[in-house]
Length: 316
Ligand SMILES: Nc1ncnc2c1ncn2[C@@H]1O[C@H](COP(=O)(O)OP(=O)(O)O)[C@@H](O)[C@H]1O
Ligand SMILES: N[C@@H](CCOP(=O)(O)O)C(=O)O
Image (cartoon, rainbow, N blue to C red):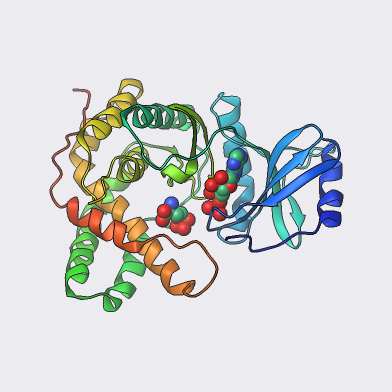
């Protein structure tokens, strides 16, 4: 489980009172998630999620709150910080920054099909279109510099084969960095995995967990999503799901020629990002009661992305 900070009913009741949403009926810690403490909260006036921010860029909470307001105002299905009757969005509980958000309907899906992937592509394009002309600047703390720095440190922890794979990827990042950073930018989710989307049947009801969101190349966001939504169990990209996600995205925001050229590199960079963060998490949380994702999954995906056959549909 990942409830890092347990809460007692009286402190919750005191915290929730200023929202004016009625009495606390029930609350339950959420086991899923690996970064923050989350609770499902039932109040007389509805269902909510309380998040205590445990790690990561705590000082940048105003960015996340502003971005979610922008996306909510653009009618995208995202949570957003509710305000107390005095208008306060970011509060503190048990010494941690705390937010109350509406609970989105739906649940995560494990097995994605082409219909799910098309909706993910469409929503991702809407997210980028809603922010690309008024991007709220935030440099990611897990960008190319971070990959180069952490990757170099981790090389010595790896066996020969994965070390060669990572070395080649780090060399490519060094060579392609300028090109990657010059690609078209917007605010990006940067972690659009299956466990950050909610579905009712094949209908995408929401996107959650914006704590990796930043300003960055839109193509990077597409590559991150594709690597999770469209990989098979061997890390190979599945044709129908890949075409569905890319086609739905490009129908709303056509890719540029520069993006098409950088596509194979971007798929590899997106693998490196999560291979490294999972290796680091596996080392730092070993033996603890924290959800750790398997680093091997991204090692395997990176190995499979050495040759990329899926072309990016782009506007001429
Ligand atoms: N607004 C929300 N609506 C519905 N469920 C949510 C919402 N926010 C979080 N959850 C639930 O909590 C779980 C963990 O949330 P997440 O933001 O992914 O945590 P973490 O930041 O720790 O990874 C999600 O998998 C989801 O089930
Ligand atoms: N979706 C990621 C976890 C989130 O990344 P992090 O760097 O914020 O831990 C994964 O599956 O690895």
